[in-house]
Length: 235
Length: 190
Image (cartoon, rainbow over all chains, first blue to last red; front, side, top):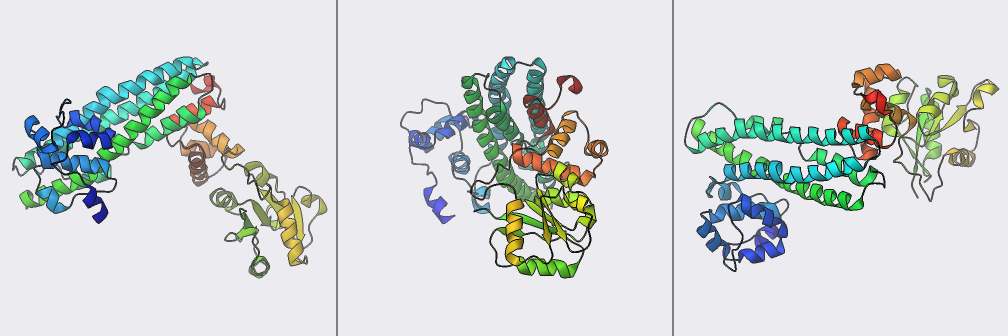
């Protein structure tokens, strides 16, 4: 852990350096309300200009970049976390409106290259089912969990939901992508165009990494944070 | 060199202890926890995945069922009178009076696969394929167990092995896999 801490990003670093070193953070910026075109300004300057809390921005970037890094309770409670739920909601939209349709386009193209129509249909149905599961998963969080957090943050004694239930019902939305990955690159017949397959494999890998971090942020940051809020307010 | 997995199925504790003592110190076989009877052998086979079974033929009679459902060598362990015909389908026969060297040699020769090139462990067995086909038709574990005349527990073990081998967990994904490999007739899925 000490090792990770010494490598964490600091607010005086240039944002461009951070993105150059870890290009995957690029997809995070829009979700954190940071537009591109930040030039050579420091992280603190860019955040301030965009109205984003610098400490919160760094916390998310650090968790995203350094596997296994979990901010301490002191860091969590000392940071303005009001941006967390909007960030998670934006991430949901990013997955549902941008990433999944992208993958779906490739799946459709592949399905049409399969010689047997029913096989193509089964392939499409498999993906459809997955997308519905993901949407249902997100809907539950947006309708049950996030409003609860909003009310707690506003100081309301909201007892309609307890975060302790979250982990029990938090289903695995990233695992099934593994099924898709295995089918696509191991078992598709050679008649399918390789370009489509490679594109979709990269898309799936990227989404799967992203979802892993998303789940990590929900389970290791959101849950403990809400636990503290509940303890402080509902006692 | 990969050690072969050896499962002893023998009701006599004395015989089992003797065999274990004889196999102690050799490096070709990993001796699995023995079974005292054939009652739960099918489940055990699926869970333990032995390469060779050393079994008292009076427990099962013919080894055909084991051969049919698992990729395994079946070696008879004989120390009482057994009908000659009954032994002919075994991959080898070991007599209780055999020497330690003969015991190990016979087991080695009967065990499939060359030591230097362990054979692929990723192909589905006939039984696993049968379970997969039923799964692809949307059947539940219970329905599959009834159709194949095995326990639900056995079906679950098969499913674990299917997932381990293919990397695919969900039924929807396995259905696509079954179709891609021409294991199911498209008309049976509708």
